[in-house]
Image 1: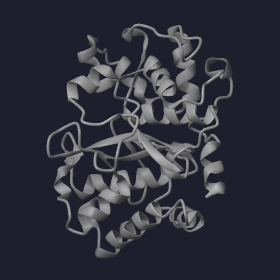
Image 2: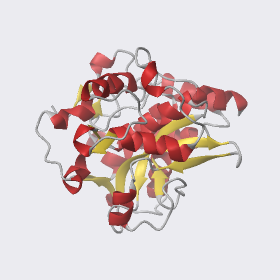
Image 3: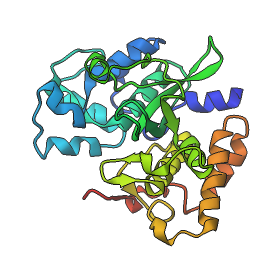
Image 4: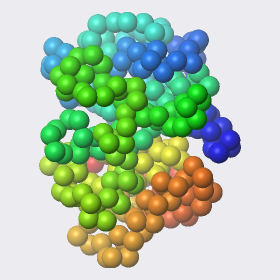
Length: 288
């Protein structure tokens, strides 16, 4: 477990900061402050109207910026010199839940806290449905366990959603990771048609978030519209029972990854139909 924690304490290609280190100096080892910093710089695209913003087509492209380094470059052009600065909503970067989680993980790692972005489904956005979502998971040294945090949920969103829990400590009752969701549906404990977002539901979406979560745990947190050759793009109608079995096994490896990391790593990295291509130019934005 010690080696695993060290792995998640170190940056990956999506969270590393190269030229913009001055914007993340002095990050405290405090989750509440880190979440505040994330909310200082990001504003969720699908909540923009609630914050009084009408987004142009150009601003809607901002979530396409992948890495934290490139986000910091963009934010610097907006006038930010440090993530601790508080600015008006129209000066924040338009983002999605994945970005809040990846940026939070990046700042945790800057502070020396093991952290990772998790992909799955939240039960607190729509009644009786499990909506596509990402959260931060960080290692709480005092409690000796991973704790999930929804870095997106500021005071406005908390009030609007009437949350029954603290966003700094989200239990698995409210957020179901991709692998858990897949297995719960496969075991007949939950209805797969309740999992998804917008017009996409069922196993088609469950497999996406399972694959995203597995790759994110191997420090490659992708974006929800990313497609690549393999199970991510193979039409679910063409799947055989063997294909479903591959996802069953992936879910089990994912869930057991902390204690059997090498087996999990090998399962993903030796399957080109699961892992993110090393050449990211082969990743397609399905929204374009």
